[in-house]
Length: 192
Ligand code: GAR
Image (spheres, rainbow, N blue to C red):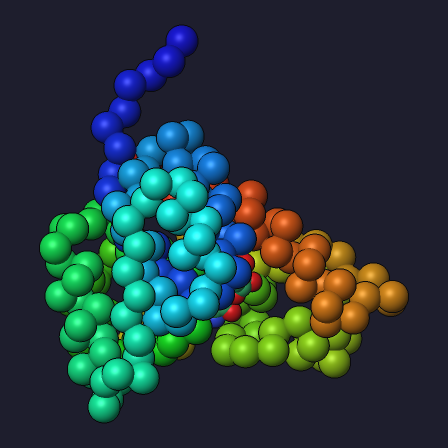
């Protein structure tokens, strides 16, 4: 039996390949979302092509055109506000967001991070996990707050780090898990 749910409108922010975006696009109906617009701060982000192919609006806002983080974030806020989204999903968006931006959308911004938070916040997570002799790597979906990679955790998925793994092989394996995790986490929030 099909259960009719109204779709929640979301905005996705990207900076690169957009494989997580692709997973959100592919699972949008099951998650219960309509992606209103994909915004990138990089003109050549492949995720913009993925969005166009799926018939989703795209917007490029270059951070290099603004003289401060705050003014770039202000332009981002204004564009996002035209859609009045229920959620803003960061999918490989590689910019730190200012307090004003985060406060404008309290409780609505969600990020996927390639580590088992609270371990390995920030960049270069896989090499740092290997160097630290960790047994497990993984990914975390969490709410975005003013403290980097520290908001409430929604869901995590872990994989075993093998002796033969390097940062590249780990990144590939974790990314495969991210593609399952992000849709599950968004669905969970929307159903809660
Ligand atoms: C993903 O691994 C995501 O977790 C990570 O960037 C990659 C984007 O891949 N995000 C961060 O590191 C955020 N700090 P994708 O563009 O193929 O989705």
